[in-house]
Length: 350
Image 1 (tube, rainbow, N blue to C red):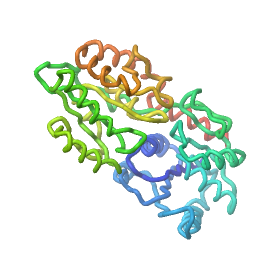
Image 2 (image 1 turned 30 degrees about the vertical axis):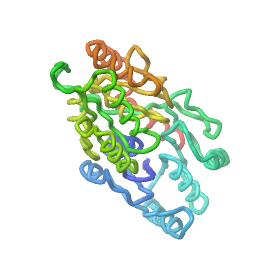
Image 3 (image 1 turned 90 degrees about the vertical axis):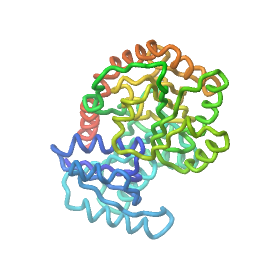
Image 4 (image 1 turned 60 degrees about the horizontal axis):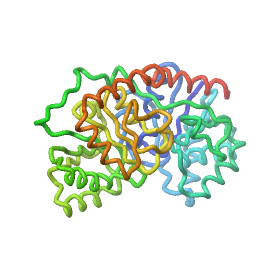
């Protein structure tokens, strides 16, 4: 069997991180190749580090000649490989594999959307119209099933719990700065600009000894920087950029925040759970299937700042929530279990 992961990019998002985790698991046992549609290479050093074969198709648009060249390049890469299974990650990868199967020998397609929401309705219609070309669609929870997906298998994201394990227990010193960690793209769905509003509300409630460690890049970075300056909040923000190794930030933080507008199942939730880091999140996408107010803080944006205040003032309780979440997720969301579930899907579609 040959496992071909087709990804929109090798960027640093959750979908790409999941491709890396799955490829690491399979690479020692099966021929594994990762195909990036675009030339975004943020995670390229990680694939090199683990000796995972990868290629860039350098497709700039599905409306110009780079698409035809990219499909031809894909065929050159895989034409002599045996028992090929396509695992397509995100919308464009599914369309690319479908087009490949139109022009060349058909390969079974497994598809993970990695999001609970598609903003462009035309894409929903296209995914619905091409359902017959896919063998299995993977969703993160039963609530994530959609009319434009087919024959859905439920497999959550996973991480290496041992790799992210804390080396010491978390403590809070009231004289030290309380660190909120934002870990993800600076993009609309992740809602990073909310941190400005949150910071102002914390200050209005008499809390000033806090900071936001912002790990990530994205198109909203300049606007975030400008808003921080406008509101004179510089001392409360540390903009750290993209980091390939997030473990130090998970360990040094006091709480992870996800003020997202929409999501699939963020990898960072499981990463935080593995590090026993308290989580404050909005109830979007598949998040409510994993988080509740017993194992985390789940709140709409109107009351999100109050959950942050509660976390600061009752940190021992926050740590108890994190301990419970770790216990609930440890066995089912470790990458070994998640990989085995994917492997069963790959074998079943051949």
